[in-house]
Every structure is written in structure tokens, then in C-alpha cells.
Amino acid sequence: MSAKTYKIAVMGGDGTGPEVVAEGLKVLKAASKKFGFSYTETAFDFGGARYLRTGKTIDDKEIDELKKFDAIFLGAIGHPDVKPGILEQGILLKTRFGLDQYINLRPVKLYDSRFCPLKDKKPEDIDFVVVRENSEGLYKGMGEFQNKGKKDEVAIQISYNTRKGVERCLRYAFEFTRKRNRRKKLTLCGKTNVLTYAWDLWQRTFDELKKEYTDIETDYAHVDATTMWFVKNPEWFDVIVTDNMFGDIITDLGAMIQGGMGIAAGGNINPDGVSMFEPIGGSAPKYTGKHVINPLAAICAAGMMMETLGESKAAKAIENSVIKVASTKMKSLAAGKMGYSTEEVGDLVAENL
Image (cartoon, rainbow, N blue to C red; front, side, top):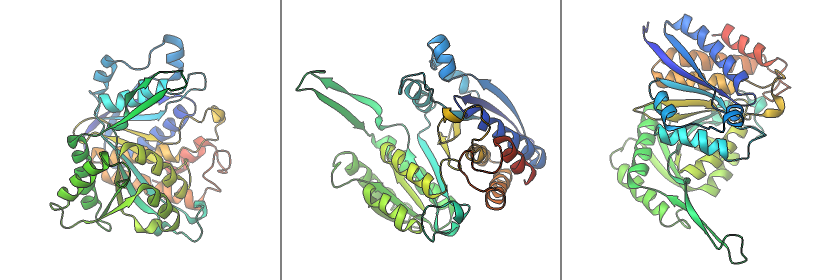
């Protein structure tokens, strides 16, 4: 039995974020009693409501405060009354960059064939992980306008990739593939035929590193082919590694083939620092307060958090309970169609641990 106490920062955020976080914490509480670990929760009110009230997103002092925690549990950021980009850049990206969460980890796993939009695909066919570089690329926000507002306007957006950033992401992916120990196959997903500078760096670094990991099978796929194969042959994949932009796109497609945003969880990982875990579905403001949003993604995110903190038994129990509830109790994974309220789904997962 573990005797460790974990310090968890809780950022409920906007819309349905606080509702799903509450269910994640409910399950975490049940898991802590069963598996003998303890934790403290500290709530932070970062989000749209605070921004509208104070004009603040998140500052450097608050980032430093978050560094004192073992992990961050996030609901969702995004408010209908705040212009798109302000909260995403001012809170989400600033936190990821400020805490150097350079890996975005997205398991794509089908729990029940009923929820898959692909014909004849079973849970054993859809079980892979996307490792997305999370701190560079187009998301650096580098670029400029020339002659803004004029007929000959030019907008330049720069994809910024460093050898250090690329190599640490690829190394994480190789190590993760080895630890996962499923098919031990790592696919580099890029666009080497068009993006000849960035993807030359990615491909060269990948080719160098694979010499160190001779137990890992490697291959390469263009990003457009990857999306095609996600739909046609998802069983081909084990672990995929890619850059920030492509990772953002293919993980949403991954969420759809695993059953939708209601089940998709992700981690923003700093292997040597503070990581942040979240359901990837967004704040879904139209469902706020209606008690119909699916909390399973947030519960899975709590499981990922415990796995990363070293509580593997608790993490496995949470996942197994989610699988049981999704496959034996729920009519659908979509908001309002589950057959249960948000709170009832949380109760079911806690009871079935």
C-alpha cells in the first residue's frame, strides 16, 4: 500500500468543466480509500468567469504556484462571452509552456463496439496512443503580418522546431512504446514531402534515435494517410508520434473512432515536473447545469493522472470500472443520451471500482 499524499491542483474552468471534474474527484476519492493513497485538493478559478470579472488569464506568479503541486486536474477552458483565443492562449498554452509540458499524451481506446462509428471494428482493433509534441511548432505563435488590411497583405505563421524539442518528444515516444509493450511499434506521422525543413529535422532525428531502440519496430506515415488509416485500418497502429499541429488534428479523429468526446482523455506531460490531465471535449457551454454531460472522459483523465503519479493499480481499476459502466450500463456516450445523469455515471464508476 502506498502511503504517499499527492498535492493536486484542481482547475474546473468553464462551462461543464466543473461538473465533470466533480465526478472525476468522486471516483478519485473512492480509489484512494480502496488503494491506500491520499491527496489534497486546491481549487483555482482560472477561466472565463474570472477573466470577465478581472481581465486576468494566468500570470507568471500563478504558474510558479502551480509548480508546487504533483499534478493538475483540469475541466475545460472556453467561454462563449470571451473572444476565441484569449483563454486558450492565456491559460491553456501559457500553462503548458510555463510548466514545460512538452508531451501531449492521448490514448485512443474503444471500450465498446456499439459506440464506434466504424463498421465491424471491435475494441481490440482500436487501441493506440498518440504522442504529440506540445510546446513547439505552429503553436509557438510566431509570425507576422505584412501590409495588414491591404490588398497585398501577407500573413506568415512559423512552425518553430528545435532539435532539443523534437528529440525529447521522440525519445519519450520510444520509451513509452517500450513500456507499453503491446506491439512495440512506433509510427512517425508527418508531411516530409511538403514541409521540407521541419519534417527533415523530425525524420533525421527519428532515424538516429531508432538505432538506440532496436527492439522497437518503426515506420512512417504522412498525416493525410494517417487520417485515412484511422478510419480504414486503425488496428495497424500502436504508438504514433507527431508534431503539435498534426497531433491536435488526428487526436480529435481518434476521439471519434473511440466513441466520441465523452470518453476521450488526455495528459499534458512534463516527465520531470508537473503534468496536467483533462477531458479533451471542451467546455460544452450549451449543456452547463443540465446534468447531462458525460463525465467518463474526466474520470479517465483522473485515471491517467494516477498512472503518471505511480498509482498503477488505482489507474487500472478506474479504467476497468469505466469499461464496465460504458459497456453494461450506458445507452450512449453522447450528452443527454446516456440513460443517466452526469452524477449517476460518476456514482456508477465509483461503485464498480
